[in-house]
Picture 1 (cartoon, helix red, strand yellow):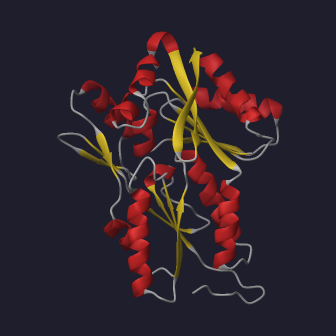
Picture 2: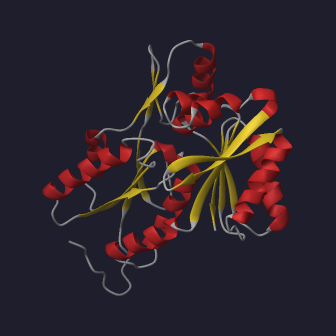
Picture 3: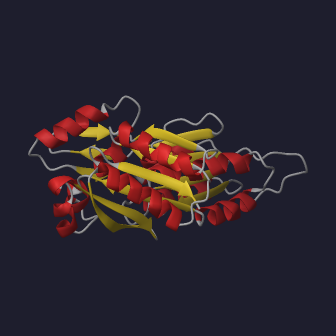
Amino acid sequence: MTKFLKEGMVLKITVVSDSSSNIFEFEKLNYKFVSLKIISETKEYIDAPGLDVGDMINTMYSSRERFSTSCPNAFEWAEAFEGEENIFALTITKHLSGSYSAAQNAAEDYMLQNPNGNIYVIDSLSTGPEMQLIIEKLAELADSGFSFDEIKEKIEEYKKTTNLIFALRNLNNLAKNGRVNPAVAKIAGVLGIRITGMAEDGHLKTMHKCKGKDKTLETLKNDMLEMGYKGGKVRIAHCQNEESASILKNKIKDRYPECDIEIISCTGLCSFYAELGGVLIGFES
């Protein structure tokens, strides 16, 4: 059942995202997150405030242990949904994680127990900063007087205008966990070669092999333009590489001085896959 609003009313919504969004709090929303986990043979790292990402990365590179990831289960999603009435749940692409499936299962149970509530699970078909853009859009829509169904429709339309591109020095974790071709991963990091790519229909697609930082950042900027960027929002997430993020920001500002750009640090899950020096860019086209 969807509630229709009287004129002048604002729908109070709750947004629940898994932690691959890099967002742990959001002032303009009733916002919650559920944690993904990075797991070694001897330790579990929970992607939440307080995680020492630098220590996790150092341990990952110095240890011979195998590292993998674990998504939030349906019970953890259900705990986040409890007590809320109009819920939008946002997940990392279902092609990289079981988070979407777990959220869907929790949503079905929620509706059985709350037949007068509203819940919608959004597959971002992406991760990181593109998810941040979706969260920001949900906050904007929540203040616009739209009904629950109208917000659903508008957020799906908005997703068609957002993109994710990335540049990575190292693809070992993506390859080990079946996310990219191991042959491509071997190239990354060799003689300063970076791999750039994009999220396409929820899958990670490699695009270019670039020699050196400057060439990589110029390629990222050009890819944004070719994909239709014309001065909209940009969110740049980096794994301990603020220098490259700032250079890219300046390159974009040189072309579009008034554009809205924010630089953020990757939290645990995105740091695990982006690895040291990785840069992820979410932008509107």
